[in-house]
Length: 226
Ligand SMILES: Nc1ncnc2c1ncn2[C@@H]1O[C@H](COP(=O)(O)OP(=O)(O)OP(=O)(O)O)[C@@H](O)[C@H]1O
Image (cartoon, rainbow, N blue to C red; front, side, top):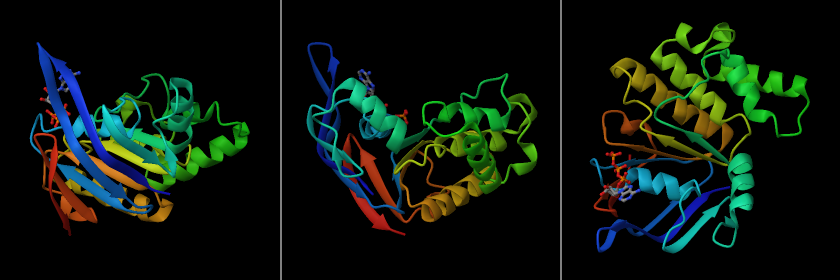
């Protein structure tokens, strides 16, 4: 199942007029595909993620998540779609300080209808997949920045999303850890078949993505297969 943006335009109020943050953007990411969106500050990367996440409604165009056109959906329906189909990895992990790595994942599944045992098993499997099986019972302050980002990624996969949206995953990490997180995202995307979009201003590690797209002044200017 894929993610598709069709001719998406998004504007914000700007004094007397409107500022165009996204200008007729079209982008398709297939299941199992990892697309990196690169661009300078203010180019529209966060706006693109927010629209893809259905957190912001575009002025024009369509966002299709796993075959569902999101345009006709109301706020409650979008919230369900987000919970069931979309994983979001924010730049800052926003982990709850008092919870262990395992518990951070478990709380994500409280509305999933799965048994507590199934939830715990899935959380353990995911921590294993991101290389943190040994750290399952540590709290955020007992983890490194790279490890916190791994918990963040594992947490976004807890509800088995079709679409994974990742905001600047390597900006707080040194070169080696940044490369490792990008490798992990590429591996998880292929293994789990998510349609993954990551946005970044830093081109250092984007070679690990299957496709790189540039955004500038709200327009996709170039697409290249790496
Ligand atoms: N809520 C808002 N209201 C008005 N203008 C906004 C709003 N959010 C973003 N903008 C403007 O829209 C444009 C695109 O912003 P966006 O945050 O998408 O860029 P970005 O590429 O993510 O930047 P950065 O890398 O600095 O986070 C910018 O000109 C920004 O000033």
